[in-house]
Image (cartoon, rainbow, N blue to C red):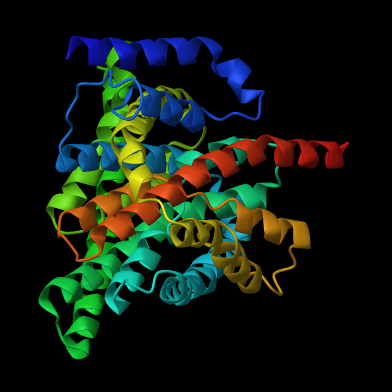
Length: 397
């Protein structure tokens, strides 16, 4: 246990000391973390003795994603978002369903051993994008604000929208329910997940802002403890929504939007500390993913799995986004940019662990495909972020 702690804490120390240098290169943090996890994992050096249970890993990934969503949402510019709301609405309302349909069709073609329900499950697992892996472009001021806010809003909501779909498919796979009951389940899950998530997020964010303002007026705030405010509020919001049967991801994103809006320009210091905690959670998550998931996926590699993973990150994502943004006034490069920067990461890992827990007949194929897609995404989106950002910078000069 102590060696595990030393390795992970040492990795945090080492990376934090060169993070500025890494940000200037084509290498991203997640690439470094996953590679480090793979090296110390059982496939190479076998130094990590930690045997993390599925539910523990799932909880860690969920909390990491909740922190990222809350921080990103709280830092969003709602004025720009309101003005350019058509972009994320098109991406979610048209692009997301088309991505699911194309993913389903490609799965039938490439992974013929899967059942129809299993193919639909795989397509749903790989549909949501990851705000954490998109930080390199979401924070770059050279990228047009409407593109950054559109990506941020899309990645904040698409995982919450996919949760009800995945739950319905998993229920159908287990219980072999009829199509009629499937539609009823879909409607029930959608209303419950979104409704409770939105309600919890709004109520707790409003309460959190009121509490901060009241205690500041009373002089009760402590600078040291104030740094934990965003972390505590994000986790409370996520856990409350989940415990009530709603979507914790929808709750944290919507709550973050309201939190940042109500505090306006006063949230910068609070968010900075929350981002630091979130970054630490991300590092630990990617190290464990590299050690526990990436290594185990390698023996199950096949060319059809690689083909589907490549398609998932390219055509199956970029074509629907391009179609959804037709007539929006965006340039061709803007549409391609939004289509390409839809990385797969934390949400996909959470969904994959949900699949592991129900033991589908071809669950190993689904998990391996999802794992390879995430690994490819970490590499390809990581190395392409800085060159594309630099291109925008040059175009502005």
